[in-house]
Image (cartoon, rainbow, N blue to C red; front, side):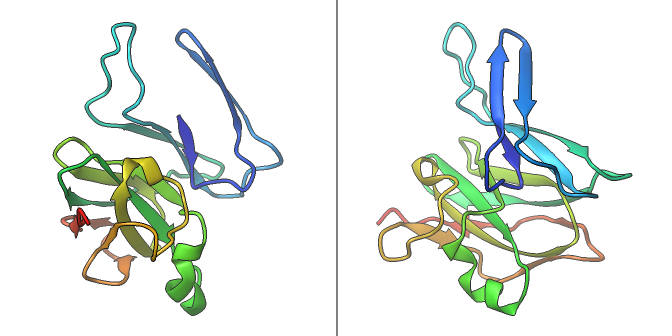
Length: 169
């Protein structure tokens, strides 16, 4: 279970049975949509895992953002998608040096969908599940990029078919 966008100090998450308690360190940003993600590692008492992750949202403002970016990651392994909201021109070049704002697992068929996004410019990277939530080390990791450098959520708040090929070597 994780909270997106990522925090510098991660919230404390405790769960027991059917209840979850999330404690945030410090205050939440004003007018921000936060997403609670239950990843595919969650399993029942028989060790049956989820077929795809679950996302739901809450907001500190008057509305929950409704933008989305979805597509497929083409690779034979379990993969995940990482998303950075770009702050400025310098961040557009150096985004990979910081921890991603959003990270989700792709389904067995490679499908992923980021939901509840605010308008803005984004960069996406696909990589192996074991590297989820890390900044990118270009010389030490296998990763895939979308052919367009920036994904824009402006007038069209839903970008589909943002497909990425993740190489095996």
